[in-house]
Image (cartoon, rainbow, N blue to C red; front, side, top):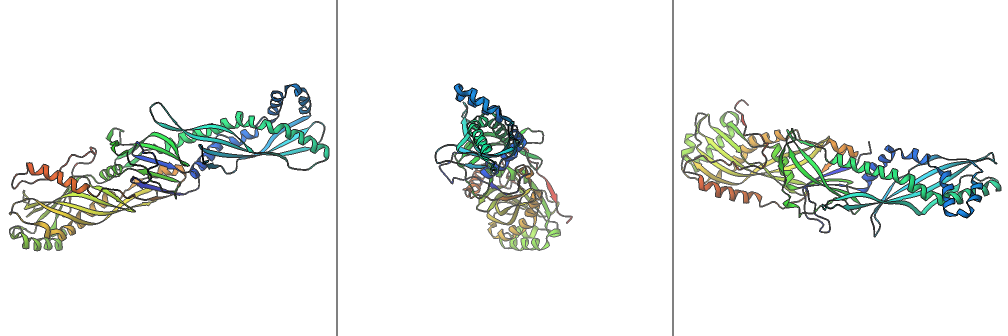
Length: 514
């Protein structure tokens, strides 16, 4: 487990930097170099890199290099090398890795190797320690396949010629120092070949293991109610110094059957970035709405207003007495208010918060025995929402509710203007609808799989999005459809076709027992 950092979950996607490529999917996992550093360091440990460094065949490399470089004097060098009784790496370490992006070129991983080799000879009873410092450079670049999908791969791996040092740790007599100097002269040109043949394969294995694990972590299912969000890696790439995964999002039921496949028409949007975080998980607006749809399924709420909220019942009767006396007179002590949310709420992201818009059908029945409502209203309701995290879960809490528009859909007591009912309707929705929806949201969304990246703290940052006109467009569309079919006195309800086919059917919650 790595040390914790801050994790930014960015619910939304907007055009911020036109220089960045547009993602094809509905989510982006952007991993900064400090996170890659931690994960890659762990993978080097998992690949037993330290032991491999200790097992480097220094003597064989020196011998092969001298014969290949200077075959004519190979015999002389061979005689010199025969004086070495024992040469082995006894200490090895890989200090802090460094990820850097040159002004021109691919992202590079600098892997410093710090080793101590112990040398013993057949002519001197002394152990000679040599300090070896080598920087290995591995390039990371993006490779595009024939289908146009990109993938991050490890390219050229070599040592840095500017940082290859072999020095004598102790000072001995002139003869020993001279012999050690000869060994160093032969060892230094042999080390690059050791890096290429023995060290680079380990680095490549560690890199492949790291990318495989990142792919596996990023595609773990995220439970959403009784269903889940599934992810598929479409492509991976290096953007600036970040490792980015373009993810396709699928909404599926517990059996793994697809409920919804997201429309890619929003792929023209480009990725926004918060550079203060080492790991950003960013999803599109339509994914956020699907999550809200799953957590807040369509339903029906029924309340005996006089019994549960007598003050609100009195306010409702008082307002009706001013605008529709006939309806006010018919209201009895067992009057019923029914609230339908036939269409799923729609979330509009704002900087740091969110606005949740929904279409509500509001019906008033004179008594609990009435089969037809006195009147039916359609309401454009809006609430403010705040995302927050607690433990390993993400929560949304709704606060306040307002009725932006109130329209009379049907009436048994004649036409009237319902605008004056705005305050009392808001109070009823605040007392009945909002607690119910916050109750459905109370379980939140589990984000425990992000701990695989070593994160214990998470932060949610909604990004400003352009969605102000969604509700009014939807209202106009629904009204034009319903006006054609609504007969006089008919009870008309919002029942639009939902893309989310796995939501629960309408439920009735009896509040009379409260």
